[in-house]
Length: 291
Image 1 (cartoon, helix red, strand yellow):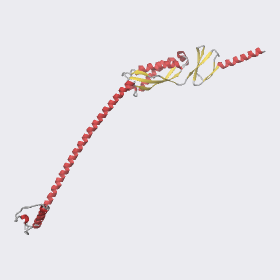
Image 2: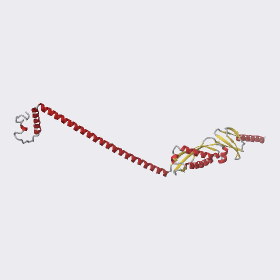
Image 3: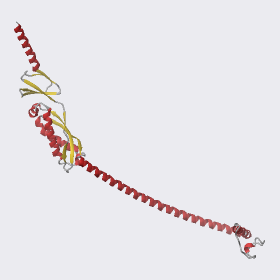
């Protein structure tokens, strides 16, 4: 009786194990490949519950989502013999699990090694015919499209579709960077010297123009002053003449007094004159000439 119970229990356990290993679930983000002792049998693309032979068949799952791979930095020689350190990344998707399994196996490490080799080769081929200016300009989109086309063509045999290949960073080698920085510094120094020379030339022109304008203004002012002085002297002479004509005796007396004032304003002034000199007539009570 005990043997029968044990046999029934063993059969039940075996059935449970068989059931457990006979069914599996494929999620919406995965695909499955059924193998029998390593030999591919069928591909399951639809999500849901699926069955397989227990202990005989194995379900290998592959991610159907977009996957990323970052290539290590590589030194590339451009078409103009410039050197660049290129750091790129690739985005790909597994589209054929059977071909993928047959080409690189069930893990991602195999495809990453192939991707690195293919991407590096394509970068060297395409960039080898381009200039540094093209890589750093709007032509970069065209260059990356050509690289993506080549990589996708070579990787299609591995059950993989390459969606995008991008250069994340492109740097010059350190020795080239130093040389370019020195050239840039020399160019900036040349531009600065030219700007200073142009500034000095403009300053000299402005100063020369200011000096010329100053000379012209002073000359015009001097000419105007001389003209006004001449007009004033002419008016003064006319006034004196008019006054003399109106009262010659008064004018002669006033002129004599003005002469006395100028002659005797300094106490040390000395005059040696004869008594009958006309200059002393007013002091002697003699009428001045013109009476």
